[in-house]
Amino acid sequence: MMKKSASEATRIDIAWYASPIGALILASVGGKLVHLDFEGNEKRLRTIQNRRLKGIDWRQNGAMAAPIIRWLDAYFSGEMQALPMTDVKLRGTDFQQQVWRALLAIPCGECRSYSGLAADLGHPGAARAVARANALNPIAIIVPCHRVIGSDGKLTGYAGGLDRKRWLLDHEAGIRIADERTGRDVSCRPA
Image (cartoon, rainbow, N blue to C red; front, top):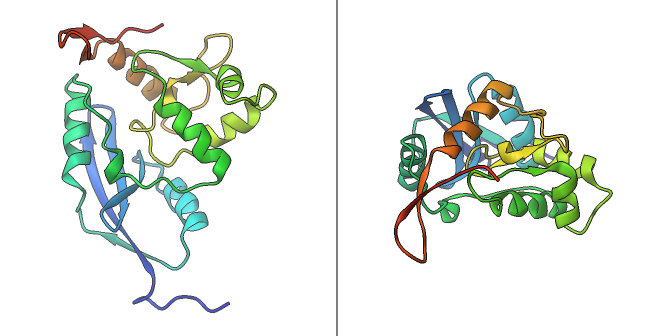
């Protein structure tokens, strides 16, 4: 099979975001976020995206959809807003997509175990497969893979490192969100 020419290649635009837990790498295709990771994980970005997209033209141009930046600004300021999923494009297998949708359903301030998530998905014996799909989540923080912990309650694997995982969970414990029924702010607390 012939490689795509540069003009036919999928263009991935790379931008950087300064967060309280280090620089974040944001990658987009056609204005849609396809990858969000931590500085130092550039190899992971290229490995995951090269599996999903062929003939990539990488561009470090700093462009990123404004809704993604607004969401990150609000999140790191302690405010939970609606997820900007219309500006996100998740690419993966059907099983990975199923796991990532389940991650999106974990409320802020709550955690699930890999085995609990597998059972919720109707695959009670698939904790390792769920853990692998979780590890291949291309969009950290927005798709909250950090909310999955070991069945013993301990923090386990996180591409951004366990210190960042702890920071994110502690941060979310203090986030204020509006109760949809009353409109009043309520704290986002761990289960």
